[in-house]
Length: 152
Image (cartoon, rainbow, N blue to C red; front, side, top):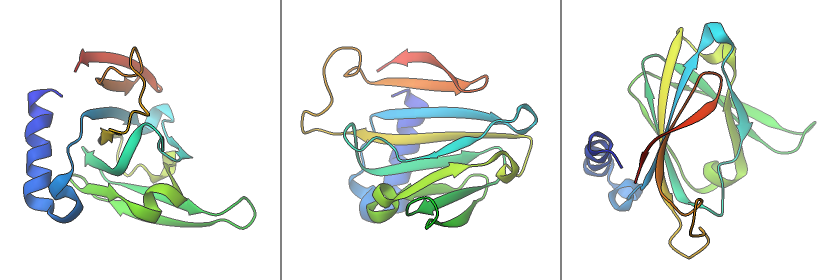
């Protein structure tokens, strides 16, 4: 983890308490969204086997609304949650495992949004060694293409 992000993680633990008090992320994924380029985050669940029970997302540059969706098509219900600039969103429990989350282009409140998602890799051996097992910091930009930024 780059030193600047390590300091952010320490601040999350100090100020967050509770579940964040023991959260030790070893993976960070930064995404640069550009409204004018049509960027969005498709509804999804984060990986259940590779990542731990807590996900934290730091919202930077501008506000957005994240849409959470629960249930199957035709019966699904959705809730928009406002994420102000400089806010920290924490997903655990049912929100982490039962609700898909995404951001439509129209829910980007400014021209540009940067988010950094912090994850903790599972320690129970489900993450394989080799390319998948290396902890890396990725920056996704330019329409969702991932670029390796540094080895962990």
